[in-house]
Length: 459
Image (tube, rainbow, N blue to C red; front, side):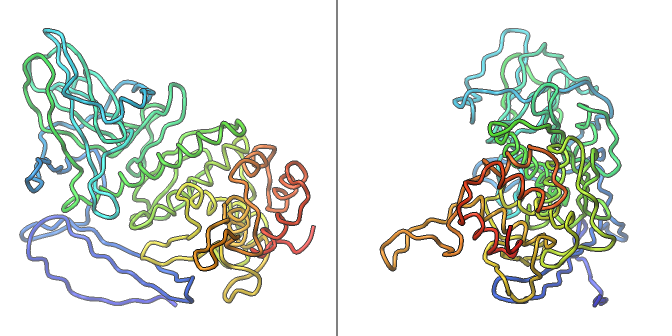
């Protein structure tokens, strides 16, 4: 039943303000459903307006100085509306991660700029902006050179000819993973830039303009502001997709399959995936969990692996984790749930607003759960039970045992991914046939893992 309420809120200072409403229903010890909605306002002294999410407008950043509180500044760098094809992420040796920027040398007449970019994560902790494009520009907006941050947020751009005037850097929530390969990006709604130019639609942040003498200069550390800039969520999304891309890349060693770009538009009016297009993420669906972002990415992973094809669409209306939908919907949505579980290493499905469902420890007759392969949560649980390693040490008995006595099978992603890439499956039944006929030794452990999660009773 929809819930409505009204209230009056008085703001005592100007700035970007967020009003958040959370609804949560606790159904059992392992299941609670929640939903979130937000209104974001730009409040002035005597007026206010709804915040516009557009990375082409100037956004505040923080200057980070060790031992001092962050200082909010408003850079004077102009927006970048056109550009050139960016380079791909380099593959540096491990020793270059966390590079010693002080050791970078620059010839006479040349300029090298080093620095660090940070962001606030979902726990309000400062972390390095990982694998994001950084551009070095002149004060008149001419691009000098581009590079990437490493896992610590550090970057080094140059040497380039010193222009002798203002220069500045801009970081983008974007990466070209390898030359000719996928793009991973978080962009504004309606972005339409062609391949390799999506960075021009991506959320970004500039440093202040400065004039430098020849040589190597460290411009210090900056962060996407947490206290006044709600756009920080776009950087969460880029990092979620980047982690997912790395997991997808690792699967190539098991079985090669087509891959593509993972570009999310945020904040859209609704969340979903457009085959051969962008991922839509609503204002609140990335709030306190990466599960929704990675779930939608999972649909894209399936689409590419199936040669730019997807199972039949879900029936009209909403589909639910614990309820029957259709055979194709149960499979495609169950796979997408499994994708976020795989990337995060966690069998719990988290909802924005602190709700969650345990997708592993459910079985036949669990209250509130329908049974069978038309239930996406059942499909996800069956896949997880094939994947996970549940042999653990029991400190009470002093012995090693299977955590789930009905599930003592574990294989990682090896055979799951091999079956995913052996031909399109429109249902879990299709997938299970490929998996079992091609890879299973026929022992009962696989059936027990699958059966425990409410899949088909027999084969």
